[in-house]
Length: 362
Image 1: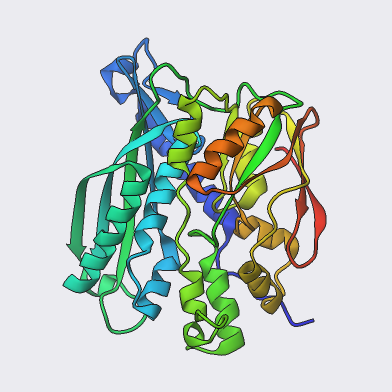
Image 2: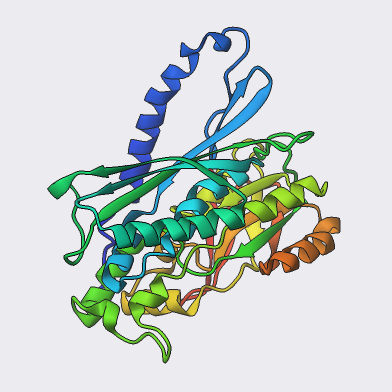
């Protein structure tokens, strides 16, 4: 077999740096006068952080698109990235049962190109319309050669912060009510979302050369166009499930770290485990990249969502209602597994080398 290609990204180091950054941020929680006798922070970091300000719970999530931006620079297609930007923050809020209501964004560029900015913002508008969010602020900063990228047109980095509220009459979802016997549902992804693109680019450049984005993926699309598939935004569906009275005991947004690491964050409070033995199959494009790069199954399921964009924990009796509502949104859903009383996640991988992967909870 060909030698496997490394991603160039150290996930463990990234996790360590995130924990360090959060530990410093946490020291600031007591700076507000409301924190004395009434904790300002009610969720100690899951997918988003929550402030309880005089009885009003406000959720906050910040993220960016990462190197998926290079796909836009290579193809000249910019109006899909807004979906990725919204999904990375609004869906993190949804994972704690918070309805995103507004978004602020920062666009750092080397130089300005009005046509590109217009296309980016048009896409952002289409995305927030689906997510039912208002764009309430933003900044465009010209940073010259501190920003680089592919080609000669405008290079940029794009990040956002979304804020939201817990729907009236409902509580935060933090996994603390998860029990053995509850079921795990998966919401299908549309593609790679915004994670693992450093490895994807390495694999494709090794296979096709520096112009890999121009190579045909299928009869209709180049590799560059296929990889630009915009992220599905799950937050409005989750909000409507909550408002309809369907109990969701835990929600995992499957981004960097894959199914196991993100679902472990949901299970850590109760120390339950899960058998996820019937998830959605990985997309053909993921299998193609995995095969070309000789990417091991465990690595693929750590870097990419492998067809599963969000996991929900609920009761079996609500499956029919959830199916009906998900059909309204045209979001495929499947019963992926069950919660167990053993602190281990067993995951049936369905990539190039199907196997059962086991992840003992830390």
